[in-house]
Image (tube, rainbow, N blue to C red; front, side, top):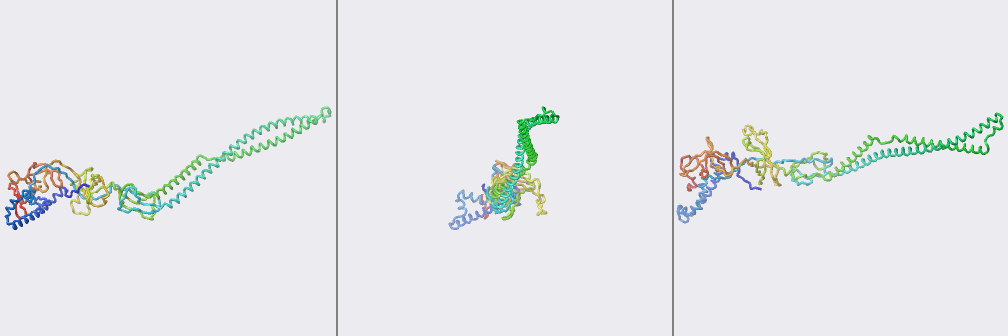
Length: 503
C-alpha cells in the first residue's frame, strides 16, 4: 500500500480553513507549537543566566549559528517569508465515499431438493471453489431409479411392437414361399390327373362301344375289355382318385397359407408409430439423463465461482429449494469500488477514466473513475440547504487491486486526480490573501518594503497553489500575514513568544 497522505485537501477545503486575515489555520497551529518550543528554550536560557551569572545578550552571542537558525524557525522568523520556486503541483478532489461491490452473482438452485446444510453466512469472505451449500440427494436418487425403470418399460413396449411386426412379416414371407411351392405341386399333379383321365376315358369309351354293339345284336362288335385291360383300367382309375385327393390337399394347403398372408399382411409399424416409439424412447433417455444430472448436482452442492463476499443468504437448512430459486448472492471480491458524491461545482473537473486514490481504514488503493451519473440527486433530509437543493452528482471508482482487507459498506475517502503542473511557480496556502478585488500576496522587495501583487491561480495541492500570473521565481512572499501589514510599510518579522524578535 502507498503511505497515506493525511493532509491532502481541496481548494475549497483550504479556503474554508483560512481565517478573516487570510492566515491558514493549520499554519497557525504549527506556529503555536513552535512558540511552545521557543518558550521552553528561552526558559532554559534564562535558567543558565541565573545559575551562571551570565548576561542574556552574552548567551545569545555565544550561541551557534545552527541554534539561532533553529530558534528563528520555531519563532516563525524564517517561515514567515517564502522564496518562490518551481515545484510540482498535483491537484485532487477529495470526497467521502462508500465501499460497494461492482459485480454480484446470484446463485440459483440447480435442483429441487432439500437443503442439507448452508455453509456460509452474510458478510463471510469465500474463495473460488469453496462449498456454499449442500443438498440431500436421497430423494433424487429414488427418482432416478423410478425414471430408469419407466424408461426400461417404455423401451420394452416399443421393442415388442417392432417384434410383432417383424414376426408378421416373417409369416407372410414364409406363407408366400409355401404357396409358390404348393402351386408348383398342384400344377404337376394336375398334369398327372389329366393324363390319367385321358386313359380312363379311352377305357370307358371302349366299354361303352361294346355295350352298344351288344344291344344292337352285333356279337362281333360287342367285345368288351380284356382281362388285362380291365386290370389296367382299374389301376388307372385308382391312381386318378389318389391324384385327385392329393390335389385337394394341396389346394387346402394353399388356402391355409393364403389365410396366413391375409392375416399378417397389415401387421406392420407405420411411420407415425415408429416416430412415436422413437420419441418415447428419446424422452425416456432424457428423463434418465436429467435425473442423473440432478443427483450429481445435489451431491456436488453449490460452490463459489470466484473469490467473493457473501452479501445475502435466502435459504436455510432443512428447507426445500426449488429449481432456479435464488439461494444467495455473492459480491465478486475482484470487482470492488466506491461510490462517491460531488457537488455541481466540481462536476466539470470529473471525467470517466481519471486516476484516483481511495483510503479505506488505514489502507490506500489506486483506481479510476468508472462512472459519473448524468442525473443529480436531491437530499430530501436537508430542506433549506442550498447545496442540497442544488443536487449532487454520484459517481463510482473501480479499484485496481482490491484485497482481503476491504469491507463492503464502510466509509472511505476518495481522492480524484484532476490535474498536475510540473515545475510550476507556487506559493504555500498560508501566503494567499483574498479580498473584493481578488487573490493577492504580500511580497518583500530588496529594500525590505511590503508590496501587494495580484495573482492568478491554477491548480492546488495539499501544500501549494500554482500561480499562473503575478509573481516570478525568487520573489519573497510573506506567509505570516498580520492585520496591520499594508503595502509600502517596512517588513518586520513576526515577534516570537516572550516579546523577542528574531532577525
